[in-house]
Amino acid sequence: MKRKYIFVVGGVMSGVGKGITTASVMKILQSKGYSVTAMKIDPYVNVDAGTMNPVEHGEVFVTDDGAECDQDIGNYERFSGENIFQDNYMTTGKVYQTVINKERNLEYDGKCVEVVPHIPNEVIDRIKKAGKKAEADFVLIEIGGTIGEYQNLLFLEAARMMRMKNPHDVLSILVSYLPVPKTVGEMKTKPTQNASRTLNEAGIQPDIIVGRSSKPIDKIRKKKISTFCNIEVDDVISAPDADSIYDIPILLDKEKIGERIIKKLNVTSKRKKPGLESWKNFVEKSKKQKKEIKIAIVGKYFETGDFVLTDSYISVIEAIKHACWKQGYKENITWLSSEKYEKESENLKEISSYDGVIIPGGFGSRGLEGKINVIKYCREHEIPFFGLCLGMQLAVVEFARNVCGLKDASSTESNENTKNPVIDIMKSQKNVMKSKKYGGTMRLGSFDCKLLSGTVSRKAYKKETVSERHRHRFEVNNNYKDLLVENGLTIAGINPKLNLVEIIEIKKHPFFVGVQFHPEFKSRPIEGHPLFNEFIKSCSK
Figure 1 (tube, one colour):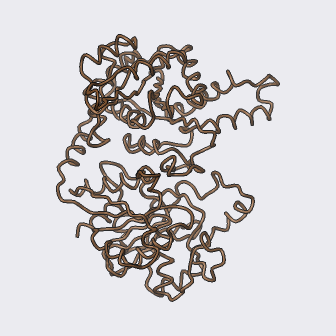
Figure 2: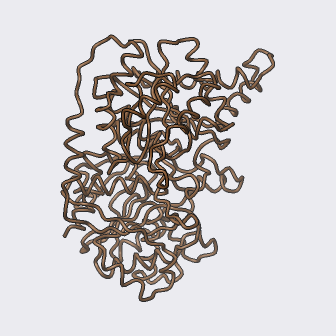
Figure 3: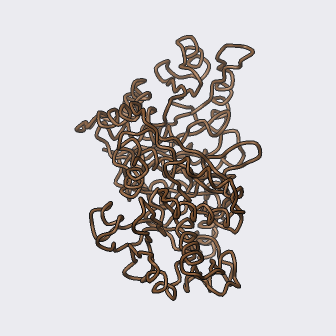
């Protein structure tokens, strides 16, 4: 079949579910037998998400080929089960950078390079390249932010131009919020009408409107949206709040969004239909769990004013859920600020009330000593501990200080003058840091890890070599490996090519594992991730 393109845009306000809608449509089209890929367009002038503050922007997701992306790429992967690559993520900065480089290289044959059409044309070229590389029947393109924002105009122009040239191959979905003000007590459609009109001003008529709200959209409101937004009633899709994001593909499928897309894009070729049965079984199982597993995540990217932003660790959260549900448990996650444990105090006793503790990745020195104190408490009181990236590095620092006797042991990331840099910057990173080339220069993407026989990690993975995703500049200093091992630390995983420590463990402990990589990026809803699964098993005991 001829490749089809679906643009997903947001109206009224951001953060109401464009990414989950895109991921859900992916899943639905897959269930009908089609190959699908998805792209995310961020309107930021940043070249990628790697330099963005996670408190402001949310988690930085890393792909197998080392792209630092928006967290929605993670949702695409989790829902579809397919790996997404760097060609599927673009920003305003990346597009402009490419166009300027082409101009400098005389690739425009001396013509005047203009914002229109050259910027939208570059966007279109990237969309088509991603679709071709994935050999996809459908390419979904999520445009970040909302349609009323100035910085989105060029991306909407790209969508308009594609639709103009290929009207039967391009479709637009508007995801818009329908508020139900408490003082009014009635669902209001006017914001969505205005959003549709704003999209019309950009030259795009939405084909389907997904109405997000706290309640299902009734027939009266569907008809009103149909009348004033110039679409059929059946093209108004109700997407009320759900207990879980994993309910959304099922809810949208009941609204027949897949059938509407196939009809509008005149897709006539038939496919073998795998259906959504395995997904439905997974969702049903997730809701039947009664016994809780209490997990504490100790970090610093939680607070934003008076609010808690869980998006900073969204992949970790989802990985915990996947592992809990697979083994018949309900997750109970608590956020603990590491700064409250900076001094070993009575506060640490509350750690004993949790079944397990996770210390995720992060940067900077704020809250580090608090995390180290929590790790020590977990080690000494046999509380299951799982350290991810920075969490693993701090576990090595804690072990070096309190078991090996190196009282001033530290990481050169937080203490450049430490006499015992058990965690040190990689040699390949030193020149990068000197020249201040921070963007896209970390150890990024998938690297192999060879597992030591007889370890918890080898037992979990059930194979000798695995591949996991990385995002860091600092590593375990090999000059201290022998001392650490002599004192009881197990080096459970090594990168065979670079001879770098990937996994550390402590034996005779319910579960004490630290990994230099980010296993949460590869966790999938139905199967979970081997290490998270093993961690939850230990927590359950």
